[in-house]
Image (tube, rainbow, N blue to C red; front, side, top):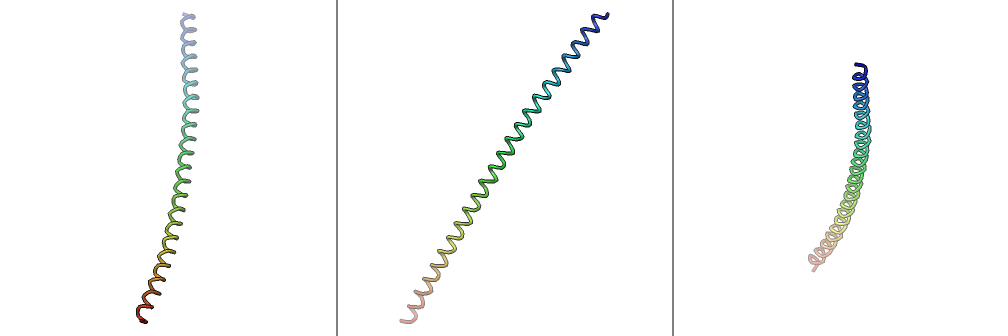
Length: 83
């Protein structure tokens, strides 16, 4: 009878040890996955910021060019009315 309880105790101890090992292993893997996801999201945010800046620069350049074209049109039109 005592031997049976000893064996049951060993099995319970091994089961609890296995659960503890799996829990710590899985938690460390989940932490690694969380860190990877955070780094990936940060990288996407940085690329979005760069794309936004590039877009704003292009829009500014296009506005400058359209202002110059409008100025030249005005000059050209004013010459035609004088002739």
